[in-house]
Image (cartoon, rainbow, N blue to C red):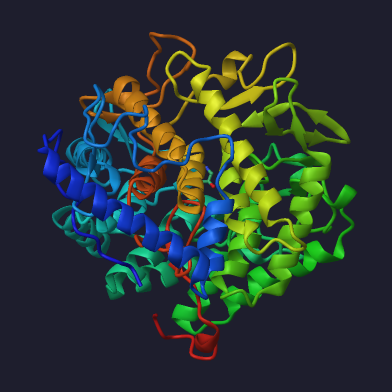
Length: 552
Ligand code: DMJ
């Protein structure tokens, strides 16, 4: 169901028309509008179209035919060209934005760090964090599907060849189960589903099998860290009383369901379904899920709740498990909507300046801080709004739009127009980082991810406008000759660079930007669900569940 789109058409700029031509154009245009209204109000399937109209934010003009600054289509601004394509749709020329960004990020990695996990774009050398132990090639595996989707076939083939010849999981090293799962297993699964190349399926299943010993605990809640050779696991030493982390053990479900489907081995699915069982037996303070859970005692650690770091993708995977199961996973659905209700009651607040934010909860006290990571929640809530129980669909879309606005403000209120790692709503500030160690930006995707979902569901042009602002800021402040780097202080007009091109910049940030400016049938949401690293996985159709080895 992946729809291969032709490269975006060339833009044609201001054209002058003679009076008669203008008149004929006007006639055609009015006929078109009349037809559309007829279709909306009189055709039997009008409810779908109308829902698209109702979901739009009332505060903002929804004209999709003007440029982001209100300019007419066909005008060229300083920072890019907004133009009509042959179908008369407004479109930012992707070839002028996201595609060259990917090319620069990829070419730089290939030139200076090929085979390393990540690139140091300033010092022009490889970089490896201890999250992947001695597994290599994180950027290659994370970028595979982005290369494929952007039709960078030479680059995709080179990456495939590297995977065939060099990707090796027989290492005597400790890895993060979560990071390896979302980036490597997720990246390989997507590459398999998109390209059909058997090597990706084999490697995904091989790595999945190596992760299984992590589940050898009294409860079956997996360890955070695992030695891939010995199968010995442990937890992060800093995590409350030897606890496992909600966002880590809760972010395996999508990949493991696909591993069972592709291997015929039901153990993967059983392991992640058991995590749900353990969670459902526990009492939840005010219906909330604490971030820490001891895998041996099966008891919560510190009562710290967050929709950002340590909690985030657990909630995301409940919703997406339901969507990916062709809406058959009722347990996932219930857990998602119940937890969202608890989050709304206990964590979501509005600032005096009218910004909605998701605070963190520590032992019953609210910390009025929101992380950049938390900004993914706008997209998640929009994605789930359609299935919301009761008549909460409209309410959840509004909530999603408010979170998107707050996150945009966190960017807009900086010198660089890039968002800080965390921003606060106390001590007289709103959506601003106050602590030095929260002012950095490491090329994270969450805000752009939310713009992309909001664009797909509302077609409100402000989301493309905001995405375009992010493109400009990335180009101005993060791009260097050797790739893209994070910055240490988004409030400084002359910030220092952190010299890391994160693999998720290629997997997520650039992919979501590309999708933000693509047509809706590019990876449509009714066929694909994105894992938390933006790797698309196909919906497992109801009728296929008894035929686990078939690829859609
Ligand atoms: C990514 O690895 C994933 O999106 C994860 O869920 C959270 N952090 C990074 C990006 O910021």
